[in-house]
Amino acid sequence: MDERSSGSWSQCLHAIQQKIQGQSFETWFAPITARQFTSEQAVLEVPDSFFADWLEENYIGLIKATIYEVFAWHPRITFAVDETPPVKHAPSFIPEAPPHSTSSTPPLRVFSPESQPVQPVFPLNPRYRFDNFVVGESNEVSFSAAMVTAESPGQTAFNPLVLYGGVGLGKTHILQAIGAYCIEIGTAQRVVYVTAEKFLTDYLDGINRGTTSNFYQTYRQADVLLVDDIQFYVKTEGCQREFIHTFNALYQADKQIIISSDRPPSHLKGFEDRLISRFQWGLVTNIEAPDLSTRIEILMQKAEEMGISLVQEIASFLAERINTNIRELEGALKRLVAFTKLQGYPLTIETVRKTLLSPPQKTKPTVSIESIQKAAANFFEIPLEKLVGATRKQDVTTARHVSMYLSKSLTGAPLKTIGLQFGNRDHSTVIHACRRVESKISTDSTFEHLVSQLQDHIVG
Ligand code: ADP
Ligand code: MG
Image (cartoon, rainbow, N blue to C red):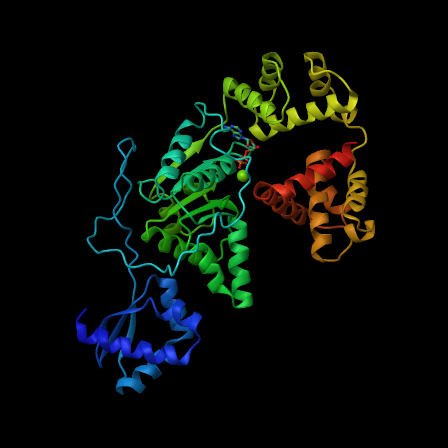
């Protein structure tokens, strides 16, 4: 870029600065540089194509008018963006080199005004750490990749790091542990953990309320962005485009992106190819179901965290019978402990046999959807009619969501039945409620505590 043309553009920038608010100027104009700027042609360099679209839609008139005011020029205006991923160096044990382009184009400066020392941006659940994550054959590759990434976020070929695996196998645990570890050892300041669903809601809220710059400040300034359950990302074109722009902005700035999914990226339905291919630029790794010895070890670990002593024999008994996933395993242990406390039984193999092998209605005779609703209405101090009614007030909605979630997890009733009993709602409403509660539980330990308190009221 020659001196004279860039000087000219800065005169225009100065004139624009007089016309619009400080924040908008900083956000949308300060990062623009001129690659070419003559009376015929203005090539303005911007951080990414979202930026270009935004300027095109909102500020092109202002830009044209200002250039005319300052120079009496009518140049053709184009925006230049570079989407080429920069080359990274692979650590020695990477199975194969990721398909990075070897283009020599330097990566463009990325949209990142001052970073603020917020840590982490959303609360992480302190239960999810590397030091209480049990490593076995089923998860050791994912675990090491997670460790390496947390030690040098954005600096390895594991960008993005994509962890996939079935429900309850530890994806959220690892994601949050990465975030916590980065903060602990100081390799990242702005750690942003978000479910794909929340990312989407925040984006749409930003658009509806005209506060997209808050959205960008949160997500595009992350040092480490952890996106959980990408399979729930709603796949409209605009939303996918936004995800790509966020991805590009972070990637080009050597920031770390970590994604979890319930299936390999190539099996994700309805995602654009260019998004799927980005998921495969780094490392994709699978978390499998744990083998018996790992399941036993996990049980012992969980018991220790719960402050109870569990003999190996009982751990083996449980682990041999529950081989679906770790959440179930943990659930069985919690039920067992609750049961022994409630009945005053000792924690022996006999008790375990009784709890585990007797049909659920014998061990939990009182749990019905009605009893959950009653307990929730009491607990949240909301009239029962409101709980199952149509009101959308925040506190009532939260209570309703939690009640639906507990109805699903405690009674095992079909979603349809639960929906019916909650004011004849659709089963998809129940699914949505359960997901929101699960996601809040995994990020908000106060909320997690609240739900378990309510649960105690129901069982007791
Ligand atoms: P996912 O996100 O894959 O559905 P989670 O991360 O929520 O699964 O894990 C479910 C439960 O199992 C959590 O309580 C988590 O702490 C526990 N868990 C999963 N894997 C492990 C492991 N390897 N060691 C210890 N706990 C684990
Ligand atoms: Mg999860």
